[in-house]
Image (cartoon, rainbow, N blue to C red; front, side, top):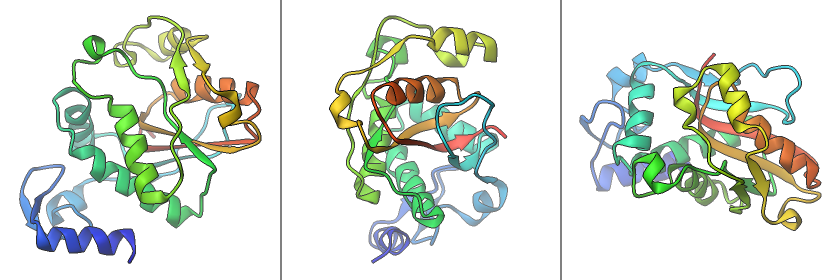
Length: 216
């Protein structure tokens, strides 16, 4: 049974709400109400900046409107259930694009106090993608010190803020492997690029990025 079929069956047995507007939608095929499905924009492959350390980057949605509101709710307002929805969508995108990897990783998160929620949204999303794609997750990317929340910063400040702030805790988990970095939002690509730089330094052969949403 495909991921889409599983989602549809679960929706029929346990009616759920649209992740973007909260309307009860039963077994909607895409897990989204028709109105929101018509209003959100698909992204698939945002443009990469020059000098990046990863290969192709993919995103399910464009980061605006209802998608933006849903992701901010997931990150900062305790809407933990959205991790499963976006995880399934990323896993579906990987299958559609024929993208496979040996291991999934995620950027290191802020502390519980700094992120303002009782769960690690980046790690939860990566685990959901792992569950629905069958690619194992390894929590190997760690912070080397304190840094400011990225959403507060300009593109130039983001690059400076993330520089030299990531380390790979287990090089053996990525050496010689194709690695997929999973993140919620891809904006400037600064975080993904710094993670990819450190993974390259530890011997990762290929590195891709997949996100729930991205700015075009």
